[in-house]
Image 1 (cartoon, rainbow, N blue to C red):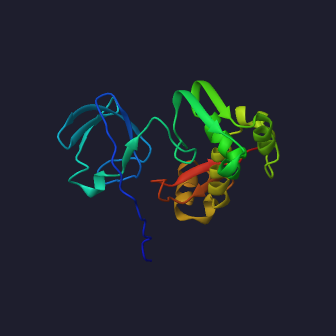
Image 2 (tube, rainbow, N blue to C red):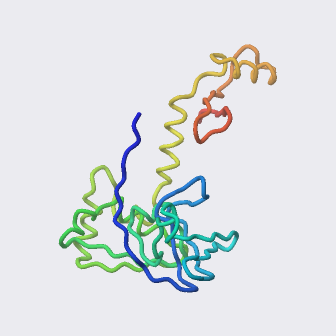
Image 3 (cartoon, rainbow, N blue to C red):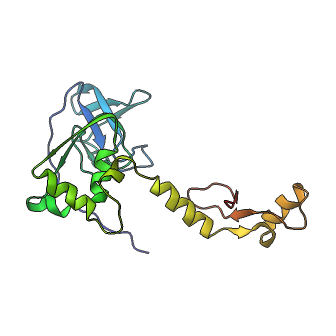
Length: 208
């Protein structure tokens, strides 16, 4: 299968010690994770030293094209903020112009669930924005954004369990049954085959 092609537009940014930066693209070989936030601890010529509090990286974006996928991390799109967590957050939401295309439950959920202590929302039309959330197809109300169900975990669990097989139907499952003294095959447990994110077979039990 041919790999997709992604086009980028280069730009220049000015950085200094103390600035917050993020990688805009993951790079497994170099250990870069997209949208991970780092702090500039030193700048020397074309070298920028970054730290996340646990590890340090030295990048040279002027010399290495692969190290040019960086940006300041003071503001980020809702899409890029998925999975992020901050003590405080400021969200810009609206219904005027192109912003109305993004007004909805999904965008609001990401924006309002990134903070640990406090979130502040700026909008050009508060009523229009909350109406857009409430009118989202097959979603609840604006209140659901602040107390959301762990939908991603539920969806992943349902997806995994839909592929599960009874232990007696696979060799590894039958071995588990024998070790547990259940060679007859009577068990609510299921066998989930290993995948890219599961390094070993998992036995899960169905809910009662």
